[in-house]
Amino acid sequence: MNKKIRKPINSKIKSLIFTFIVGFIYFYFALPAINLQDESFYGFFFIMAFVYCLSYFVFEGFTRLVGRNVPGAAEENKSIMSETLKTVKIPAFLCVALVIINLGGALLSSVVFRSRAYTKLLPIEEGDFTEDVAEISFDSIPMLDKASATRLATRKLGELSDLVSQFEVVEDSAQINYKGKPVRPYMLRYGDTIKWLNNSKQGIPGYILTNMITQECTLVRLDEGIKYSPYDYFGRNLTRHLRFNYPTFIFDEEIFEIDEDGTPYWICPRIVKTIGLFGGIDTKGAVLVNAVTGECEYYEEVPQWVDHVYSASLIMQQYNYHGKYTNGFLNSIFGQRGVTVTTAGYNYIAIDDDVYVYTGVTSVGSDESNIGFILSNQRTKETKFYSIAGAEEFSACSSAEGVTQDLGYTATFPILLNINSQPTYFMSLKDNSNLVKMYAMVNVQQYQLVATGVTVAECQNNYERLLLQSNIISEEEIETTGLTGIITDIRSAVINGNTFYYFRLDNAGKYYMISAQNSNYAVLCSVGDKVNINYDESSKDSVIVTAMSVEILEKAGTVTENPSTEIPLTTPTE
Image (spheres, rainbow, N blue to C red):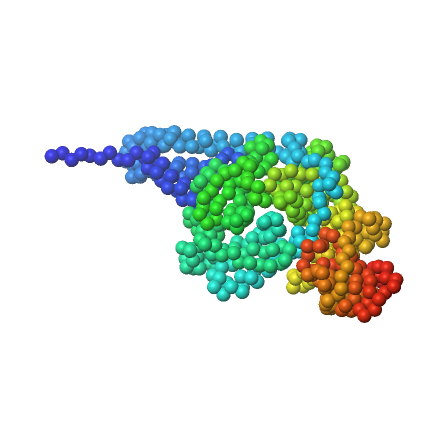
């Protein structure tokens, strides 16, 4: 009985199988996008072409040539090599074609030839600062910067004995609006590979939420643990999960956010290149990944609760293209007429439940001054330019630090506020331990006007007095409210060397605070006195309201025939 003779597997098929295996392993770990606009795709293709050519030479040419030094084999060897070269010609040709595409695409994307196109990446409108930026209430102003918020989150984790030995705080966190308040949600990650093995089945139990106003940190424990993150392994690694679901997408850096119900999501902006093949980097929607279940969906227009689609660095880069190349590429190098750039730092402002990135704009070569600033919506990229000349942010920080130089405080990068229609830098002053001790306000246009306070309300009151003294605003522009009542309790405290008095009235459930530095006569008040307290209307919702003045209408046990007028307040420098 004749046995059926198996034909040997074709060398091309063996080469393709081997190339596929190598390619899958490389793709699994390198995760390039299958997209001509992704530079890493070219490296992936070249490696695959090289592996195919080498494997085919081994399977077809090398194995047939070994040991063929017999007489008359030269012609057959030559034929085998010729056949091998013809087979690898196609992948070699494709490699050359991709090199040409790469070089041509880079040339056509160059800002040297397409500078006009680069200036149009960020549509910019002229804005009215007073109209666009409403005066913010005290309970909406972030008191912390990123470094301080991260420190508090790390300290909170250290208090949780069941988690601190297994997890670490991921320091990279974005400020978002959550239920109308600025917060930073901090992701946790496994301490190391062994701890991942011990905890991966349950996942990461929750996240830490830092309130940027109250400075309160809370561990939010989830019913089901977070299983998809950049810090997980294999199929639950976020980057790998995205790549296998969206193999052609190019992604920007993912952002950890929570929706209004507190459900954790990864916001993964999709990158597109709009100029040539590699230029004009922009964002087109985002993929939202549920951090617990891994469910993902792509949105060209993201839901309202999402705050970060366009990164601050992308917005600043696009503005710099606009500022540099409006008058052409050559002008950006020679002459530099009208060339502007953003300043080195940025911060965030919450407006109508959206997060806006703020940064100053300065002329090239300017001396510590801004010609204006921009506000850009990080969800929609709507951007407005405000032509307000004034101090550059770091100069304002130096002014604030100079007022408290005896205490050695350092200023955080400022937030831009509207105080009585005045563009104002607001910043926290921190000690050497990175803890917030005071607050400062600096007038953008006249940065020698600096006010400080141990509370935001006190800082604003001091700042408004400076504006009054400098005839920048009138008394009518300060909305104050008067409250008359009998003092039922007086307390005092010394904060940073200043004495503060806290009054409680019989008809109000709050304490009204005033500094002895701002009122020389606060010490004369006693329990039982009938007084009138004036305070800033914008601070009425605070737990402790900062008073602007105290008027004694009637001393306890006496009748005042001619009630005194409002007790004058001294300035902080008196």
